[in-house]
Image (cartoon, rainbow, N blue to C red; front, top):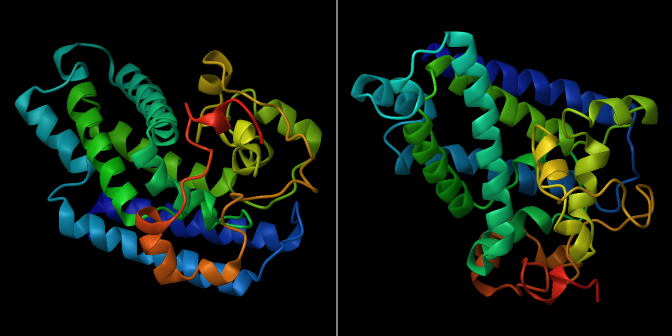
Length: 277
């Protein structure tokens, strides 16, 4: 196993176990559906996606960074800044690209069809942060590889970014209780569970807010920040209006959902972006 893969897997399983235990000891919300059923479906998708990526892409983001360095591709491979500057700049720029990609998946109806699989979860916890349709994962990976080729980040920066992205996706989707004072301070820099939970609200205006996964700056600077859900964190409804029946959200059904499901009023630019009705 390559050292990069070992580091990523180590951090992944470490964060997963830690946050899962935190959810068990101090949950923020009472779940409305069967956790065993949801986890079976979500973990099935989580296991499937790396297999799909391996079959489709000959290199990962770290490999692309090596290729970019060898061929002089990318902005940072043609500058002479100190390594630490390149690393910090790379992580920040890649995080902005992920934010913009997330907005795009809400703005383009055909991409929203893929992304709605993530939002169709009727509860939100650590597994929701990793529940994405395999085709969305392929598109996202293509964007990430292109971003690495254009930015030219050091391999170290890519590793740090990948670890942060996976870890923060699990953290900010988690059903954990944080003291409100700590949440207010943390969200000045990073996306907290309370901040991101708003994004999974049943109301379209709230779904189309708080797109960040790691740094909270982009939502604040670009006008997509919403501090709290209208119904409060304990009473808010998670998911999409058109998918409320767990019997229609089986593993196989979720995989075909983008092709047969209803798009609803959630995509930005449609009626749902302007009204909650």
